[in-house]
Every structure is written in structure tokens, then in C-alpha cells.
Length: 305
Image (cartoon, one colour):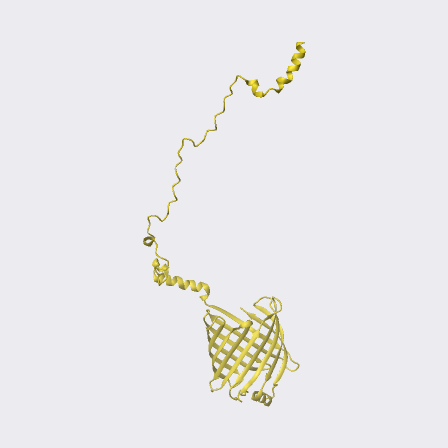
């Protein structure tokens, strides 16, 4: 009987609230979490200090545009004597292009074979000096069985722009006879598109006036193979039968040369040259039994050092 009573009361015991199981035991309430800043007065953050506070900028720094002017001379002369600085500047200019130099160029030394009689010709130039002032010596001539023409020029050359020089001096013709000496005024330089041009006016010791214009261009087919067209035109103001020169356009020379530069300083070439005389000059040549219009093959060498 008691067994059945216990079985009937068991569900009631299970359904009883959990809090009834601890009746008579007062569970302590956990204290609230302590405030880590409680009881501590945090000081207020002071404002950022003004770096210019208490400073009158008008007294410590000059106004923009009111700075003292730079020294009128070289600043380094505050620490070194003018003589020392002058020597230093002269040495600096010398090391940056002011040093004297020299160059010798034989731009044309060639043989011109022909069915009748071979001929030869040369043209060259040498100079010594700096970027602005130079002494220039030029020579050119030609001949066959004998020397037909030969000239030498001694010139003072003055740079008048980055690409052109003004030249004045003397020219002396050794051939043809009788020889002539000329006062010379001319120019030499590099025209736009890399054309090398040269011109001069000549006044002889007999008062005869003449002029010459030359031009050439290097057409680079490769880094070593260069095709060079070249032209020379001569004029005269008076007739000079003694030297075979007539007034007006006297003669022209057109050339086309193909050279191979084994080195920049050494280049053999082949080419063709056409020469023609005009006007009274052609008449003088015919009277002397000379050709007035010739075209010849040329083989030669161009060198410089």
C-alpha cells in the first residue's frame, strides 16, 4: 500500500519548481561589477599648445619678398679671396670645353681614272684652338699629268653662333700661273637638317672679286655606310684671261661618294664626279684645249685625326 502511494506522489515531486528545492537557503545576490573609474576624477585634457603663442612673427622672420638681396658678386668670395676664385673659375672653364684642341681632316684624297688620262684631287682642313677662337688652314687642288690648281688658306675663325663660324684671312693660289693672293671673308657651319655649308668671298691682289659656295650632306644608310652628295659653285666678278677665269658663273663640281667607315677616322670610298665650266671660263678652256664638261669615276680615302 505504501509502495503505490510513493509511485503516485513521484510526478508531483518532479514538477515542483526548482526554487522550492532550495527553500530555506537565501542565495546571496552577486554585487554589481565595479566601475574601474569609480572614485577617480580624470583630469580634463588641456588644449593643444599654439606653437606661435607668445611670439611676434614680425620680429623673428622677414616677410615674404622682404628678404635681403643676394650678394652681387660670387657668394664663395665671402670665404676665399677674389684671386683664388678667379683662378678656380678659369680652371672650371678650361675643364668644360675651353681647353685648346686640334684636328686634321683630309676629306677628299682621290684618283679619277679615265680612258685617256687619270686625274687626282684633294681637299683638307686643319684647325687649332678652342670653342670660340681658332686658327684654320685649308687646302685643295687637282691635276692630271701636271698640277692644274692648288690653293692654301690661312684663316682666323670666330664662332658667331652655336653652329656657324665667321672666317677671315688670306688665300694663295700656287697654280694656275700666274699665282694670285686673296683677302678672304667667309663662313662655315652646320645648317638645319645637318647640311654642312661653307662660303667665302675673295679679293685678289689685282682687285679681282670672286666667291665660292660649297655644301654636303651625310646620308647614313647604316652606321658605317654613308652616301655623301656634294656640290661646289664658283663665281667671278671680272674676266681674268691669265688664269682662265671669266666673269659670272665660272664652274661647278657635283659629286656623289659612297664611303665605308671601318672606323670614324678611316673611310675609303667610291663615287662619281661631274665638272662643268660656263660662259667666258668655258671659252678660255676651249681655247686652251681643255674639256669643259667631264664626268669621271672616283676612288679615294677620307681620314681624320
